[in-house]
Length: 178
Image (cartoon, rainbow, N blue to C red):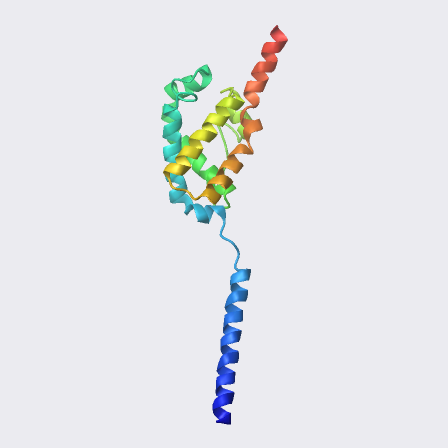
């Protein structure tokens, strides 16, 4: 009887130790990156593909935009769209903690930042917000969970000043001409 009691006590102690070890390992397991939670490069590229096509058709920032620079790009530069989709995919992969490196360039040029890449398009803050809204609709289309959607949109919004710099430069130049 005493041996049986010691065996039960030993098994109980072993179970408690095992449960404690599992709980401890669960607490130390690092959280998955946004890249992993989004589903990796294939899921990201599918979202970028849909998003990019939606922008072309968007009445505010696409082929019928009131902004002549955006309208012109979406009507006359679509041969570059596949490469732009690739670059956008790399950007999302990198900012979400993935293994890919985004290195923005113009054809035949050296690397440039988001500000310079978008300056000639003269994107206004309102147009940027419409692009963000299109991104939000695309994330909903892809059924991206709320937490991940919020993180993607926050990463996008963090670059609003850079991307809209060209419109501020245009406005400043117009004010100087008055």
